[in-house]
Image 1 (cartoon, rainbow, N blue to C red):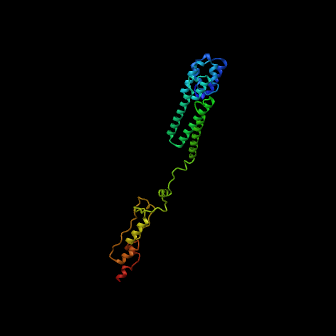
Image 2: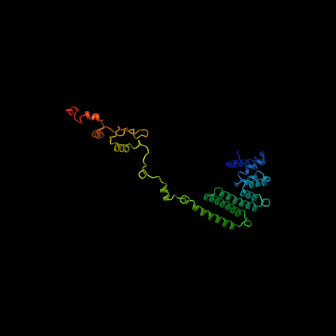
Image 3: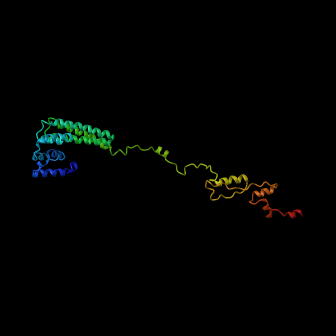
Amino acid sequence: MTVDNQHCLDVLGFFFLLASYGLASAFDSDELISRLVIIARNRQTPEFLRVLELGDKIPGFIQNLILKKQPMEAIRFIFAFEMVYRFPPEAILRDYLTCSKIAARKIRWSSNSIEGLVESLNRRVSDLVAVLKCVEDYKLESIFSPNTLKQQIKDVERQLSMRKTKLPDLDSKSPQPNPREKNRLAPKSAASAPVLPSKSVSATPSITASITASTTGSRVAPPSSTSASPSASVPKTDPPYHGGNKRRQARYQGSDKPPREQHQGGDKRPRIQRLL
């Protein structure tokens, strides 16, 4: 049988079996006491100790509960077996309240947030309520004033309610970006972005062609489909004609054919007629 808090029902059934059939003598008393610690919160555990005749093990059982940070269970067994003189409840409860403050402070410091503060206050309230219930159940008003404990509970609950009201507003109070800063940092659209002139000659074939045509006076071939690529070169143009006849040179500049082809095409009268 496993011995942990997850198998309390198994341990409880085991002791019911021992008490019903008187089988406690078949087991070691120290082993039985170690298992009774698991079900110490059960109301029937003190009766198991009486039926199983483990009265001589009760002081060690109570001391084990105190060491395991179960002071409320220890006080219950102290009054059940009348051992107040050996284990004073006042010292146990005061030590419990001191440990409660330290535990709540550790929870608050570990998280350093409003959630951690709320958790620590919840822990503090539950511990004060447990002490108040113990005082009222076992008539310990001469040791602890119930009114003082109730006032402490109200004060902590007031702090808890104030902190809980801030929890839904955490998202709304998060820093929002400045609209001006947001507009300044936002990327500009393609329509408003300035168009910078490209340094590549091949990326602007139409501009290059118009500049060349205006300076040379010749007709430039239209850019091919591959001229827009970065690796394409500028279309070549024929060099200007530097012949002796200015009239022929002017006509050549307006035509794609050289002067010889223009003469053969009939732009001037045949040379034979000039001889006649």
